[in-house]
Amino acid sequence: MDDPQDILNRPVNAHVPTVENQKLIAAYVIAGLTQTKICEMVGLSNNILKKYYQDVLDYARELLVSKAVTQIHKKVDEGNLDAIKFVLARQGGWTEKTEHSIEVIPLRSVEEIEAELKELGVPEESLDDI
Image (tube, rainbow, N blue to C red; front, side, top):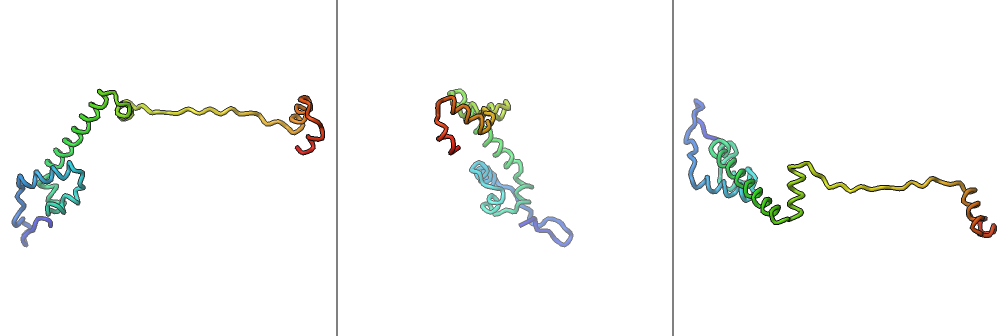
């Protein structure tokens, strides 16, 4: 679907962008379609899409991002904790870390344990199973 060319490599029947295609392409970008899918839907090659509609692709993406940022700011203004964390993480480098601590208890020998059990009054016959 690239630009057809004559034997002298000159474009023949070059594509003419239309307002209808511009609107469709912008709507498809905002809807989240890939460029490959947009090409299928509009009936253009990827080269033609980029050559004649790159400004539309860029504008639609910027519009989509702008709308998303506006919604995030609204949620932040409402005090939405998830939105606040999102902005802090992306813009402020903030991370939510959970600290864990482990108490290491030194190992004791069997003799030390037996002596302690004897002090507690455990009969020696019971210690034979240790």
